[in-house]
Image (cartoon, rainbow, N blue to C red; front, side, top):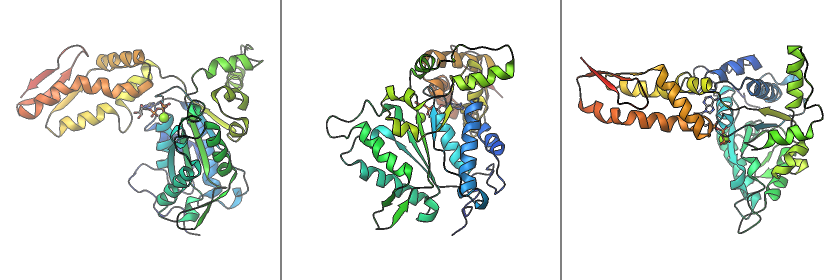
Length: 347
Ligand SMILES: Nc1ncnc2c1ncn2[C@@H]1O[C@H](COP(=O)(O)OP(=O)(O)OP(=O)(O)O)[C@@H](O)[C@H]1O
Ligand SMILES: [Mg+2]
């Protein structure tokens, strides 16, 4: 078998791609790109670490561990897809994403699943053995109920049944006649599951216990936050499907402070990207902290998590970006309020 670490470090200098990778190293890597969501980060890191131990370069002793597919639950725009994409860069295994509703929009869900596995093999440079140890991220599984069943598509339930098979580890025939065994593939499913919290408070008998001890309260909170397969039934997930996602990573709403950090802190933060863009014009871009706060406030109103940040930021910056290339005398552009024009400092 070839070395699973063969393209380590590709395009990613901060990657902890080492045989001695640990969950905390994965979290530290995630911290560079994903703000907050600490519990979810830990859960994901442990699941992916376990997968890596099972299939990665140091796989020997943990080879018999059964796999724990993961369900990521959290409001829209709070970092589910981002976390998965970042994880895929953090560890060196082939990774593909698929969108559950689009799997249901075809007549033959089997073809779509085959295509998804073909992509996984592509990501592994055609090496089926390497693809067998990959990760498949299926997004928006909570939308499976609403789609299909009518028109040309198949029902969400048919999609779940098809996914069930490969989650269990069925050999799937590829176009070139080779087979890929999916037993060791790690499946991560994601969804916003709007309203899940209400369902949880209804279905958990210990929902109202509180203790004075902080540590115990944390454990209780965690129990309270546990999602049972039956809780997912209302979203159209059949119990067999939900039951194959034993690990649940929950993401929370983003606070004002987190939204502010998202604008400026991650390695690829919006503010950094635009500072870079202005720097290429020989201009120093300054967005004062109160403006970052105003943008966060607006984003909270839009209720789509961090997703609206970029649009708001770009709208603010566009007039300045229009002017700057014509004006070689401008040295500095300073934003002091989201609702006022920028100051141009010439030199
Ligand atoms: N916790 C976070 N840290 C840093 N950036 C974030 C975070 N959450 C969201 N973002 C930003 O918002 C964008 C959208 O987030 P993402 O795609 O991860 O949302 P999602 O949780 O998958 O939402 P949906 O349920 O709608 O698919 C990301 O590309 C990223 O720029
Ligand atoms: Mg997403």
